[in-house]
Image 1 (cartoon, helix red, strand yellow):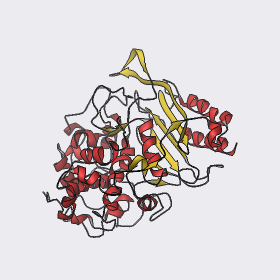
Image 2 (tube, rainbow, N blue to C red):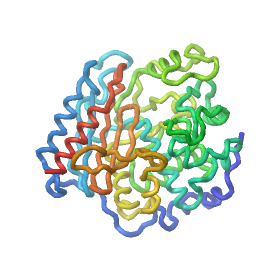
Image 3 (cartoon, one colour):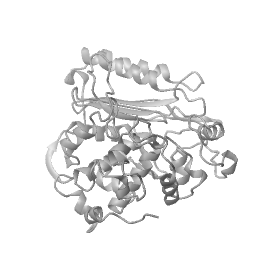
Image 4 (cartoon, rainbow, N blue to C red):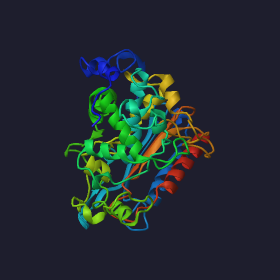
Length: 425
């Protein structure tokens, strides 16, 4: 179906991706940009005592019992390129297949996490930034340019801002067993909302953006971002379908949350007549090193625009620092300053940029009201603020070992408040 790659995009891919990666302004060696280096809070105007309160914040959410928020976490804080905190807490895995481990796996600063919806920014949005920067995609291009049949009002900008009127979520795997079939299914769904009638956070929109990257470049999303983004930044622990040698933070035992979503039709009605019992490939084991999200796992084989990326806190910090640097890191420039400004500003409503969530430090004294970033359902979050030079990454395994999944909101707020106190001195 609709398998034609856009000629304009394909021309940028012909001759090998290396020609694209090292084109002017897109990953070539050039001026030296700041890189993360270890230092002290005092070097960057942060109060070490207030910064030390972060340990208490994480400890308050830590533990193996039902009253805790997560069994383990990794926290990273940097300012102006100086890494002032990078610590691990608790355990990466406490259970296997429903039974407690005799010796739980300790969390480490380099533990690899399922980043869930942070994929939307660290892979799909990043890919779109390069394609727009290179002039191969325009933000107001209709999606129909790559996927014929979509209404003309469904544009790249609408997809990136969750204002395209698409369904928020559907279990594509009830109808599709491979990525092409999943895209065909999503493409055939009716719009749920009028285009532009408000923001409705949509996994489906980012599935389509991931497919747009493939049709535009001729490369799968994972291949494109590996060569175009992650490898130039030396984000060596970041990628889709990670190899088994990594040390992972475990998530849930199978997909009980999604099974319940299908069974109850909450929070989104399920289209069609198929249900939980019609699906025969439910996983029943503890998920570690394989994507938790059902659509990414069952239908997209681990590589999707909305979920599927794995990575470490430091790798995320490197990506965020490249944006704070105006698009470069070390000797590599990945993005123009202009494209970063466009993607990280409010678009149709406050709080939503192009892919990025904005105002991540809003309402926190000492931090101003800016900042951009994203969060993921597995318990991951990051934010960076050009005005203060601050970046923070909080990765947890809140889905482990099982339901109920405590919300990360109170911990994330407490982290930001502690950072605000540290910044005020």
